[in-house]
Length: 238
Image (cartoon, rainbow, N blue to C red; front, side, top):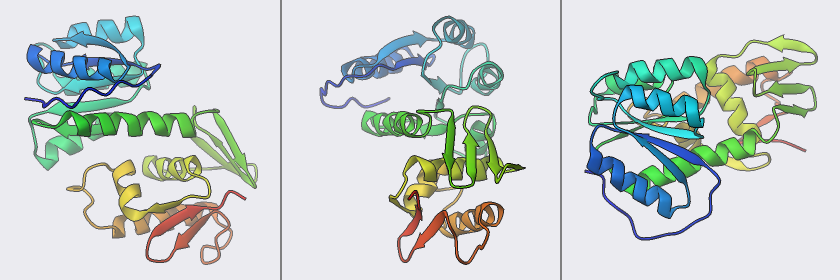
C-alpha cells in the first residue's frame, strides 16, 4: 500500500493520469497529487487508460503493470506509438528483468510497491523539471551544436550526428543544466534511474566519453562537456 505524506499544497499546471486496478492505491495517489496542485484523472484498467489518454492528453501517466485487461507493458507500448508524455511504471514486480522490460517498452521511470508518496512526488517533479528546462524550445543551438528535441536529432557544423538513445538523453541533460556541475550519481539517477542496472559510476564515464568522441573536436580538450575532478561533469555554455 502506498503511504501518504503530510498536507503540502503547491501550484501546478500539469495533468496526471493514474492507472491501477487497486482502488485504494488510486484514491491515495489521487488525493496526494491533488494536494500538490495537479489535475488528476484515474483509471482501473488498460482500456480506460487508453481512452482517457487520448481524450485528455495528460502531461504524465502513472501506470501499473498488473492490469485486469491489457497488460501495463502492452498499454505502455500502445501509448508510446501515439504520445510522448512521460510514463512512470508502478508495480509490485521488483526483479531487474521486469525493470529493464518496463524501461525498454518506453517507460521513463519505475517505482516498486510499497513506496512512500514522497518518493513518487520527487520523481514526478524531477521529470517535469527536466521537461521545463530542456524543452522550453524545440531547438537548442550553441557554438557548432544544433539540437532538435522534438525530432531528437543533433547537427554538428551542419552535419547530422547519429546518437544512441542514451547519448541523446545524456546530451539533453547537460544542456538542461548549462554551467552547472552535475555529479555522477545525479547523472546516473536521471538517465538510468535504477541503481540495480548501473550501480557503478564508471558507466557514466563510459557514456560521456562516447558522447565526447561524437561532438568534441578534441576529446582530451573538450569544448562542451568538461570534467570536474572528483565530482562529475559540467556543460560549458559560455
